Image 1 (cartoon, rainbow, N blue to C red):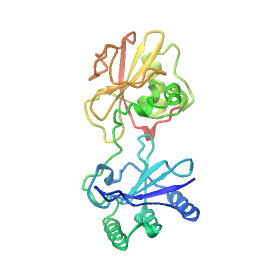
Image 2: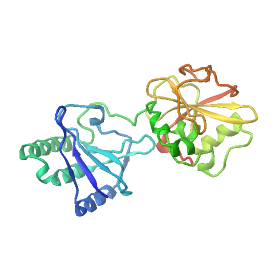
Image 3: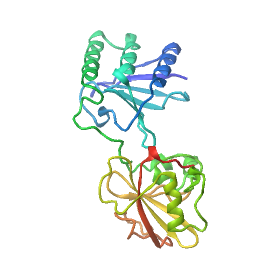
Length: 282
């Protein structure tokens, strides 16, 4: 399957793009596996800047590569909130990708990028910004959950709260080997989620350095449901096999799941701090 590389640098005109040869793809695969050190840093180019912003690697059907990744300033940013990014030590992957450009780049473009990479290597990981960016609170992105019928059908509120598509209709506790009780209740379901890695907290009023906040409610004797606090400071949820949404049963935006219209889910349990890279759900 083709592996496409795009030099992300221009604003008005299209960015240069080229396809790796099979040999180059094999070399890149090896670099991606070497010294795979996870990090919560994001490639600073991910927040936008003018000039050189790194290389975008994209592939379709190639299991050893991410579908899309940005490598810039010592960070391989795979753009997924449920997985860590990785350190690109001394920007080796960037330098390799620059070397594969061939006729896709003019010499002045190649010289400019080489100089930018050298500056970044000298400054250290994520040197182009004074603020180290943590993995982001997930945005409200219903298309991720609703556009593919298979994803919508096979992922539930717990998947959505963790921002992890597993296609297993995940259950609290199953990822840690002991599923929560039936019928669900605050204590048992909450404890099961903690075994999966959720962290109980007293409020969701701050912005966590990693991950995001979620909330658990109960339909007494019947069911549980989870809400998620998104990057827009509003809550959203995915009721079972139905679409993800950012409104309650009355069609109103959810500023706080404790007092929104939750239908029969009348029992409020607790807030939890979810760090997707540190939770296991199945």
